[in-house]
Length: 251
Picture 1: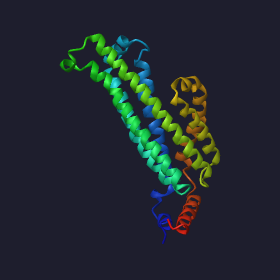
Picture 2: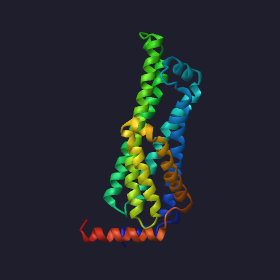
Picture 3: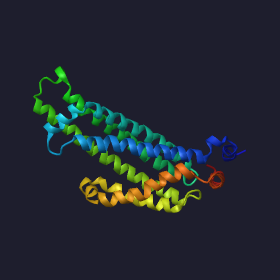
């Protein structure tokens, strides 16, 4: 019995459809937690060009700031689980491309975790106490603001890696037989938009169009995965064909 046949005889809860639905849930959770932590919370507290007022906002809303940090870390965890499930689901389509997509996403998750660490740094600086007694209040506020800028730059880099993952995954979805090809096309277009953040001014300029592309690609993908999953029979057929091809090539 081949590995694929053994998988076909597995329990229903471990079916490709179930894994796809779990991947969709993790994708949705990552989007909600990362957006709330990195975008909504910081958008409420950070005042552009004003380190003193930003510092005052952080200290006045410390509990909210901690919630944002926890959600940012949670987003990196959900992203990692999402990457692993996508690799398993799309390995039968193209093993090399699926592995590359997983590697790109894991690097992106590492950057996302670094972003979360930089997220917390301003609060640690502002409440450093005696360990930072050599700095004036103004210097501490400026240092905290620098960490927030670094957080923003790291977040942009994370978006670039996410964009590359979208392009690769869009290709895999398009080449698959168990998901609608249009989802792959839309996801690849979405990825091109996020990659533009490799030059942040360009990404910011294009953001209205990127937001539309993201809504047209990522929301339908999440809904399809959660509600429909993947076609189990077609997934098994494509997995079996890939397995037989590797055997013919002696891999």
